[in-house]
Image 1 (cartoon, rainbow, N blue to C red):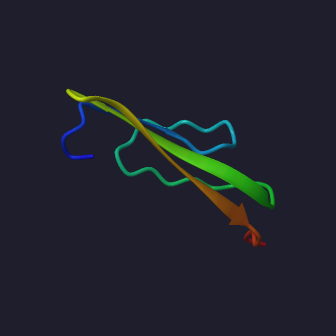
Image 2: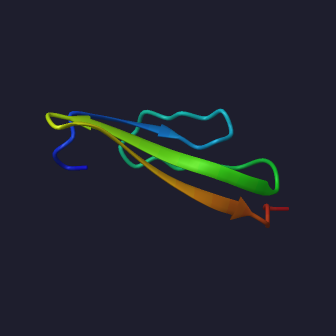
Length: 58
C-alpha cells in the first residue's frame, strides 16, 4: 500500500485500528474476516482474508 493515501483495517471483531501495521488480540475462538481498505489516486481497493482463531493464551 505504499502508493495509497489512506488505509483502514477491519479485524472483524469490532476493532478498526488506524496504525499502519496494527496488531489485534482476539478474545474468542471463531472465524474472522479481516479487511484492509486502501484509498489512493486510482480509487479504493479492499483486500479481505478469513482467519480462524483456534488457540487463545491461557
